[in-house]
Length: 207
Image (tube, rainbow, N blue to C red):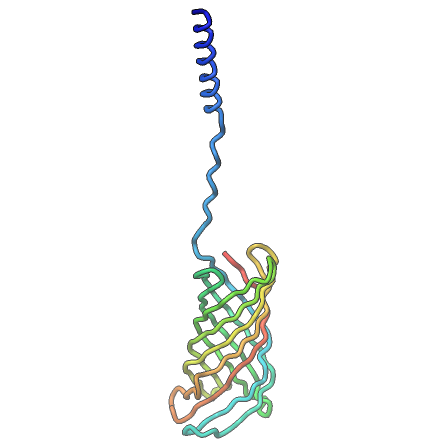
């Protein structure tokens, strides 16, 4: 009987110790949830607009051709990442160039476009990208020679280098042109072809 009582006491004490050990085990830490909200970024760029030729048309016939000096260019972009390494952007782009043979006159362009951009990360710091955009372009011949407006496209290639988690240096090349001849606002008889090519640098800020 004494052996039976000792065995029962030992069994009870073992079970109690195991139960107490279960009580002091620290609960497993739950993984931190990763945000699934879209990443938003802004790009501000400035640089040089190359001196590509400009053609003027009358009645669909190339009437005059002008060479242009290298000028200025600037762009502002608001982008949203819609999936891994793909973004949709709203883009404003401005250029201004002087006519080589008519230095008192300049040609300005202002476009508002939607871009689709694809990124290719090379490592933790550097990324290259390419984009295609479509939208409206307005050309202005200054002073007071009127404006031309129509649909156009742009092609973009560039690279970024991260400075911090949210700030990167950006360098890119752009080519922009109308879909064919762009008509004069008040008279479709007159038109223009004025492609632009620019080299831009700036900052990208992500939120």
